Length: 292
Ligand code: NAP
Image 1: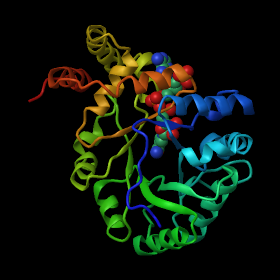
Image 2: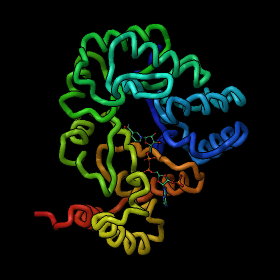
Image 3: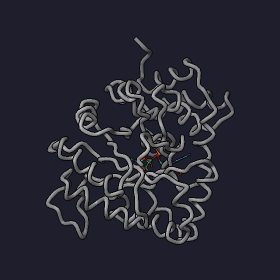
Image 4: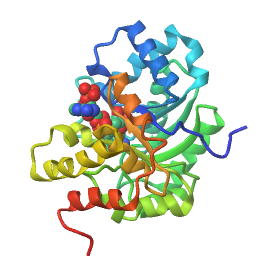
């Protein structure tokens, strides 16, 4: 029977950059085991990551250590037709047709060496999406046992609502960080809180720009964050995760690093509750002006 809600680990590990990590198969197995030892049991993939190659690298590790699969939750995404050497589309575009979603889900299953995905997200809003038809695709693939739960990523609140009324969605995976505040105001995080559907958060460290960005905003945010981090005795990264976790929608931040230490910095944020002054100090630095 399909459980009604999927439980992801509080911190999710993202595999977008896996092809850059130069890990051999035993190294990938060890990396997964170490993530799981930290309490990270949910892994975020997409069909297109690493030019369509990342899922297979992860799948090789699951094949080498098959006991891992049943202790983890596998998340993947589909719906982007990205030009690639063996996919010579005229241009990048979105496709949520039954045939394409099915083909990509089945390909992810093969690549990841598994029979079932715990959660599949439509990666970006397809302006040509027929919500009722896509919901039917979701039902069929769930009935076949291939996908337990469905969700979306980067969808506006109204795009989420449209699909959610045709088929229950588990989450909207959104960008949110001290350098990306739009989800606070565009209704997506409000909707997540309203529906009690915890959002997943991508690029929680702004893809590394939080540390390395040389633009005025990144410098301002670092300058505001460092004394708070020092006072709390935590790293800048842990403070960024704590800032995200402070949102009442109860987000699941997705790490992006290949370094286990960096995953530890995310987990270290879980027991921290920032006070409102610290939270707003970071918001203020990012906006470049005080609250009105
Ligand atoms: P991120 O944590 O914001 O950025 C990770 C990058 O920051 C890595 O290159 C990492 O390098 C660097 N970094 C981490 N700590 C650092 C430090 N202390 N100093 C300097 N650089 C540091 O996350 P992300 O990779 O952008 O995204 C996380 C996950 O979200 C992805 O893996 C993917 O699963 C998901 N995602 C989803 C979407 C979507 O549209 N749904 C879009 C983007 C990402 P090191 O590896 O060297 O630590």
